[in-house]
Structures are given as structure tokens and as C-alpha cells.
Amino acid sequence: MEENFTRQKVNTLYLTVYAEQDSKSTAALLNQQPFAEEKDNRKLSFKAKDIGDVVNPKPSDLAIVIAPEGNKAANELAEKLRQNQNLRIRVTEGYDDVYAKVHEIVSELEKALELGMSLVDFLQIYRRCISMEKIQNQIEIFNTGIAKINLDRQAVIGDGITLLQKDEATSLAEFFDSKRDNYKLKKFVPASGAATRMFKFLHDFMLGYDPKKETINGYINRVRDNSLQVFLLGLERFPFYKAISAVSDKNIECPDKENENVREDERNYSFIKTMMSEEYFDYANKPKGILPFHCYGDFSATPVYEHLKEAVAYASSKGQTHVHFTISENHLNGFLDSINDARGKVEAESGVKINFNFTYQHQETDTIAVDLENKPFRDEKGGLLFRPGGHGALIENLNRLDADVVFIKNIDNVRHTKIDTISTYKKALAGIMIKLQEKIFGYMNDIESGNINEAELDEIVKFAEQELSQDISPDFDKFTLQNKFLYVMELLDRPIRVCGMVKNEGEPGGGPFWVKGKRGRLSLQIVESSQIDFDNKIQSHIFSQSTHFNPVDLVCGLKDYKGERFNLQDYVDTNTGFIVQKNRMGKDVKSYELPGLWNGAMAGWITVFVEVPLKTFNPVKTVNDLLKPAHQDPA
Image (cartoon, rainbow, N blue to C red):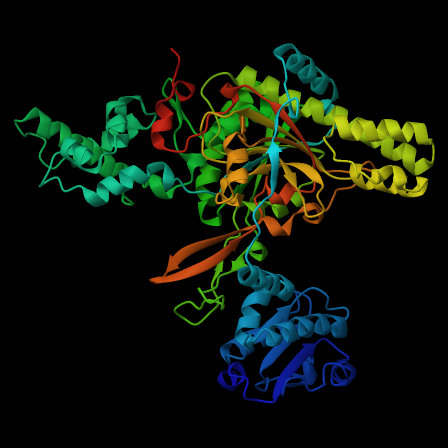
């Protein structure tokens, strides 16, 4: 029956609803219009049964079991349906209004059918909690493509970026310290990525090197990449050297070779093989956050340790700090071990209690993959292929945090020293955010209470223009007074982010720009190179003239003037995602990545850019970055 339905050769699709009670009246309602109406040679027919009356469920195209999670009979029924291979949905919420819940499910089903999806497709999508509207929008994006960003000009000091002198930073940090106990603070660390790229050149070496046919130096000359040479020259300075060499030295195949160069090659080859092997350390498949980055005497510190140390320095209030990591589910145990290793040490050193939690990238943020003809791609079992939506999916993780002030920083941006400098500038960004937020909240309350005149309104507009970099409509003076107030409230009543920017030294990644929107309005945005039309000489020139780089150093205000959380999804520019091409099972596959977390996902926020010192930006993109002074013991 399912095969026939998938081919859309049957006219009637039979659905059975199992509820705790009132099944007959529910069935009668469902078999009326609009559900019973024939559409595209297709018709839905409903039956309903009280769960307690069912002994052996009869087969149907789809069974919907609606009852609380603790209903034993409902769970047993769902299990019987599974054993009978009857397609089914088990509903544990919304059971108090069966008709409304079925209405919701069937409405989604009809949208799936209109898109040419099968019932199996629909269930796969429904169980991921992805709406059919999202699927439809994503397929439309594949068909129409994504427009490139329209750069107006680069943001520079005095035009979109504020220069922060050291004494100003100190003063703002002190201001934040005087206010911090009034706020619920949280540090948000995107940490789900594996270290694959960090060890890419070593992975290539393991694939391309044959110790029986050439020396390591011969390999380096052949591939013309000095990354391996740098790695080997600095080998003993890596924080993981002692742990790995203790194992790898036992695995050297011919340790007694007379030729010293041969012995050295075999020792180095064994070290790399042991570090990369799944049997031993498997570093390339572990997340960056739990790898050794720094040495403190005999103690090897991970990025998790460094982020906990930072959190107590600038993101604590009332003697405690809260740290939130977004991770991959299969890395949970590794992160728990790493945090438990570091937490007690940092708490003992700081006297600050550390609270932490994790979330995974939510499954409902996955996006559908298509083939080169923009048709849904099928995996080897015939199911739809979904791919993670990229780091832009984390806007939903951020959206669910209960916090007033959130510090955002990437997992690999840590350093061995300068914690005082990092802390000062992080607190300074928070001080700027709180000062601006206090002004905004004051203005919003005055407007709402009617305690403001037109002259004072002009002062607010000037503040929005000069301190918040808002592009005021050229028609503003033509608005009625009431519309002016509404316009200003809409301008100010948004989440706010203060973003640290460092001077551009050629790092790959995004930067700060003035961007022109569809209606010609300008806004400050963080823009990635993939969003630029480099065939357009003007756009290419503007991008090349960028003076600053985005180090992902943000302080965010997530609540409004009434203390209520913004719905961050309302401020996402859905037109700024990315279409990427991958290979799956030897076939080309296109997937859609959601607007980046600090790019399109925050496009509608109030945005303030502030220059921070380069010493606050110390990412580890490749393992050789750990040899830089920022990651070495200065002693």
C-alpha cells in the first residue's frame, strides 16, 4: 500500500486516530470538509478508536496515537504498530484536544503531498520537528539561488567602528564590575566542531607518505608544503608531546637502525601515526575543545579549561559563573571528562563556583539536501538526506538561554597568557552594551508612558544615529508625530550586540561593513567572503579594503526594556544563507546552510563595532598555531 501511495496511484489515504476517549466524535469531525475534500485525485479518510478498546490494531496508511507519555496502553499500542510495520506517529503533547492536534498534523501532511513527498518522507520530516514551510522555502532557495550582499563601504574607525583607548577600556570594565551583580550573565561557547582541519596536513602526510620509498624530508620537498617541517621542528614544544611520545616510542618498528636520519624519521613517523590513529589518540576526530593546548608545568590545559578560567574572570556575578557549550552529541563524554578535570582547579584558584551545561545543534535546524536538479536527494535506503544547518543553527540554542548578558567566543580563541588584558576588554564591551541598553530602556519607557515631547524625540533619533549607527529614514521628518514614535520604538526595541573587531592581518573570514538592504537602508553587518560577488569589481574592491577582521568576540543583550526575552528568530535575515556543494556516495549534493550566527542570524540586531587589541585574538586553526607565542609558556 505504501509503495502505491508513494507513486500517488491511490485515491484514498486511510488514517487511524487512537485517542483516550471521544474517538467517534473526532472521526466525524475529521471526515468533514476540508480534510475529506478530494484534492489532486487524492482523498483522506479517517477512523478513530479509543485506545482502551483496541486489542489488535488494523492496518492503515498512517496511525496517530495521541495520549500522555505515561499512558501504558498507548505505549503498548504504538509498539504493536511498530511490530506490524504500520507507519505511525506517537503524540505525547496536545492530547487534551485531539481534533486540534490531528488538524495540525494533517495540515503538514497535505503540504508534503503537494510537494510530491511520500508518506514516509513526511514522517521523516515530521519526526525532525521541521515544518513543511521550511522545507518548501529551502527548495525554493535552491531553485532561485541566494543574492549576494550589497556592500556600501567598509566600516572603519570613526565610520562604524569605535576606537577604544586603554584608559577608556579600564573605565568601562570598572563600570561593568559595578553593575554585574544586577545581571544574569552567561558565557556561550560554540564548541561542536571536530579538529579535522587542525590536523589536515598530517592526515595528508599519513595518506601520501610511504616510509619504505622516501624520507620525510623527501616527502616535504615533493609536496612543497612546509607545514610538516614546522610541526617536526617544534615537536617537543607541543603540550601533548610527552603523552604521545611515551606511547609512540614503544611503537617504532626499527628503533636500532644505525643511520641517525633513518631513526629520526621512524621516530617522527611513529609519533604522527600514534597521534592520528583511532587505536591511540585519534586527535583529528576529537573536538578542539578537549585537546591539550597549553602547558602549565606538568598540567596540560584544554580550551575548555581556558574558557572556564576566562568565565570566572569576566562573566561571573554573585560568586558564580554560568558557561554554556554547544557540542556534538557523540562528544558529550569527552567534554564531561574535560570539564571535570578543569572545573575543580579553576574553582579552587578563583573562589568562583562554575555552573555549566551543554546543548546540541537542534535537529529541527537541519536542512534538506538536493541533487543538481534541485530534487530532494535520496540516501542509499531511499530516505531524504538532511545535513546540519551550519553554525547559524546555533541562533536557536542562543534563543533558549535565560540570560541578560551573554558573552560569545569561539572554542579555539584562547591563549596561555594575558588573561588580565582579555578580561579588561571583554568587560569593557559589556560595559558599553549595558550603558547603551540603559539609555535605550529609559527612552522606551518614556515613549511608552507618553512622558516625552517632540524635541526630546529628536534627541533619541540623534542617539540612535550617532551611538547605535542607525540609518534613519530620509522621510522621517514627513511622518506624523505618532508614526515618529512608532518608528523610533521599532528602531530601538531589538536585541543588541557589541562586537570586538581586530585590525585585519590577512586572516580568512568575515569583517565589518556597511551593507545596503533591499530598501536602500544601511546597516552594520559582519560579512563573509562567500557572501560577496567578486565578479563585481566595485564589491570586490570594497571587500579588499577592509581594515578590520571579525574575531567572534561578542557581548549580547537578549532582553527588552520590560525584562522579557526577544525571540531571536524574528531578527534573522533568511536571505543570507549559503548553498554549499558536497559529495555523497559519489554523487554531487547541494545543501543549504542557515545564515551564520554572527552574520545573517543577527542581521536585525542593533550592532556596535569596537576595536580591541590583536592580543585578544589567538585562534588555533592548525596545530602549528600552538607554536605561536600566545600559546607557549613565556618562561
